Amino acid sequence: MRRHSAAFLPVLSVAGSLLLASCDGMGGLYVLETVMPVQNINFYGKIVDQYGQPVPGVIVKYAGHNSSTYSSGASGSGSVVTDKEGRFTTGGAEGDWLSIDEFIKPDYQFPRRREFDSEQRFEDALPWTNYTKNNPFIFKAWKIARYPAVRIYEEGFFLLTPDGRKSTFDLLAPDKGLFKPGVQEGDFTVSFDKIDDTWIARVDMLNGGILERDDMYMNLAPVSGYEKFVEYKFQKSRDTAEKKFYIKMRGGKYYAQMTIVFRAYDYRHGKGAIQLSYVVNLENGRDLVVDRENYRAAPSRPVDYPKLELGLPETRAK
Image (cartoon, rainbow, N blue to C red):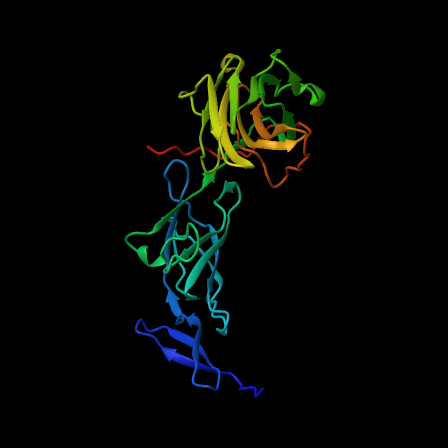
């Protein structure tokens, strides 16, 4: 059989992008990829803290990207510093989509990497063209005045039989007393039940309340809005759900934030499972900020951290 050598041909599309095509030598033309033109990405952003105040002097690292694998790869990555109004722009970026990779300033917490794409090819990516000098994208930071004394626990796995029986969790107990079968002294119970193919997961507070939220930072427990229990139904095979909560414990003496991953299926030996992480304020306050830079994870073991004063005033919005 005679072989025909392939050739790549650029074809200009109606929208101005290039269609990279292959000719098989026999008259056939196959489109391989759309090559987007390199653009100057003039994205405008603004950083404010939890009180709505602008955050000046933040180093913002960014990068432009070209989605075409056949492109030479325009980038124009760099960094800028926010002005006195917390504003910045990425005038040096090139490509067809943009990533804001990192924010740097001591005593603040910042959001994770964020992508902006004019074609919205990525999940949760917003068009960078929507944000102008008069309409910047707002990034929310968290200003830290102090770190409270906290207890931290991460990634503990617990098996639960799906028969409606409750197990108790005591977040202030020593390591071996955290999980107790049945209803005992503690902070809340968790149970699984199963009716036909439906799994039911339930969390009941013993002397407090629970509030499901998905705040960006989970750093300050609310004063009100708590319920006595939460319940979830799962009907898909191997269904898993991550839920974030604030909890009020022991009559409101302690506050915490916790994450529970419910594994509502036969995880092991016919039992379901939960994966538990939490932060408890040990000072009887609602502040749940954790010094993540100096924190050292100890999976499945509670660790207490002392308070740390930073000496920064908490400038609240007027």
